[in-house]
Amino acid sequence: MQEHTKKRRTEKGLVPLHFLVHPANVERIRRYVSSIEPDDQSEGSITAEEFFREHLGDRPEWAVNLLGARTREGFTQLQLAELTGIPQRHISEMENGKRSIGKERARVLAKALNTDYRHFL
Image (cartoon, rainbow, N blue to C red; front, side, top):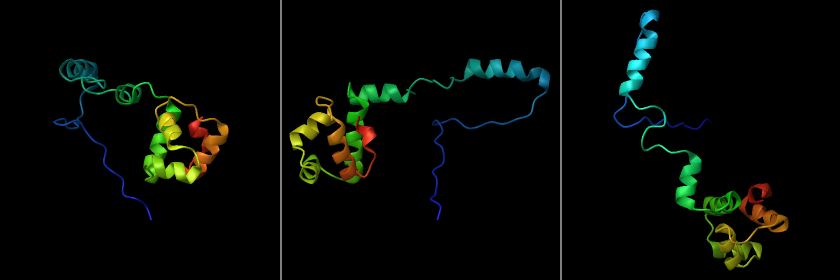
């Protein structure tokens, strides 16, 4: 059974506009529209990298992946620690990018979090 998909969000107050014009006027209309409407990088929009840098600081990607996988599975750090045998303090340090994970721990964490261990390397 297919999942329902969400409609794409549009900027508040903007509506799509489609119309036919004479080919000779296309470039003039494009210039006019771009002079009165913001471009794709309008004020308030940011890239994914900017979002992560702003909200997650300097955490490495593997640390964010660990936090995300643990949250997705609904585990607390303590529950994950009990499940994997890795001290809760170490899990906290890994999620904050202060302790590297390493290949063996990545495999243990990946098994507990139902994901690929390479996400944590």
